Length: 433
Image 1 (cartoon, helix red, strand yellow):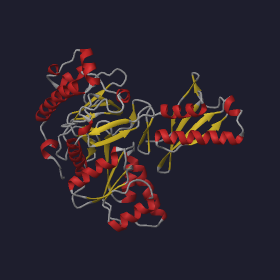
Image 2 (cartoon, one colour; image 1 turned 90 degrees about the vertical axis):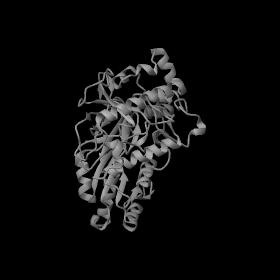
Image 3 (tube, helix red, strand yellow; image 1 turned 180 degrees about the horizontal axis):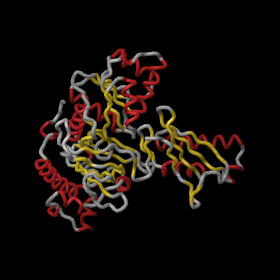
Image 4 (cartoon, helix red, strand yellow; image 1 turned 30 degrees about the vertical axis):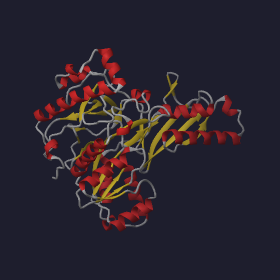
């Protein structure tokens, strides 16, 4: 199996932990000096860089949460002056304000090499033609994989999202060998190939790199059989980097975390206590090589576990189990992070008051579908039929604006939503992941 960076991907555990400690001490000094948020917290807790003498001392440091990032919007968490930032990306937060991430020139270089690692592990080489169907823009996904593919020396087709028929035409004419997408969109492509009566054997596809959403082994097997490629998963956390945090090798026994750039921990999501290796809990990441946007013990909200046993591929990096659920209420829909609070804010802003609702998510065919069900209140009931339709349309547009997804919105009778102990379950996720 090809390995992009044998020096760091195949280090002994002792060498790796020594490198992590050295880099961690540098990061602690940098954030204390340059990031007001961390300096205040460290001062309040009486923490100094010299206190971090071993990796076990990491637990002395506070967690960083999405709320911290939102409070410091837009540039409060940057550790370098804005003049040193060459790229700005963002992801959705729990409010209408996004979380803003900055990258220096060196950050981009490191990012490119980290994504090159998991793409090489998935089988991509300089001979490949890589078709990227992620959205290009503030989202980190497309650019991160783009950088990695170019670093490897592969040819990149920056298709972006949508227009499935054109995606297929490009695959045929340009001889695409590696497909980058969400797995659900790959299934859409497979469905369309069948409708067009195009034999997948006529394509040149051999590799699929799928990330941005939760998916099961059954879905993986289905796409491999229908598109005749080898499918691998990769883990994306925009707040700490984007693509390049972790990815599967062809052994497919978990995703290798790039530990020379990220220290992973598994904690009890309720208590915050560190859990032993192999335990299932919330994944926490500390960045070691980020210049512009260093992150100390960032709570990802993703439930996983860590496997430190050696992998047959030769990499010594720890492997994380595929993420199947979240510790918070965040939903991942078509690769987009959606918080129920965003939907609630959208409804409240249009309805001008609290309105009973429920978010229903289900998978129809290969695609996720979101429906927002709203109970009729006296205020809504008093509206004329045409105004009710306008009301629903306004909510639909507001949800799309805030979350970036399209949702169906419909009214139901008052008190018809199921309640438990008087409360409506805000989310009903019917997907079988």
